[in-house]
Amino acid sequence: MDKILTDVKPVTVSEALKVIPVSREAFYRKLKKGELPCWRFGKRILVDVNQILEAMRSR
Image (cartoon, rainbow, N blue to C red; front, side):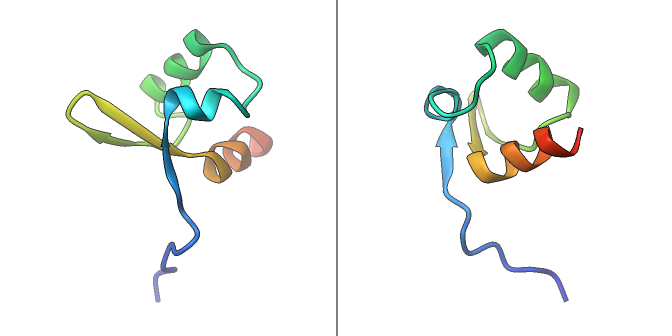
């Protein structure tokens, strides 16, 4: 059965960059390449900080 994501708190890229030690340009580059998970709603991009940190650790 699929895991239900109950502890996901989507935040904007600006909010995520306050706790993730990477430049804005590098962050957007990784999002564009599909290296980091995100949700897109039109022009708005939301991310889960925990998922981003986990993805960065696994690379």
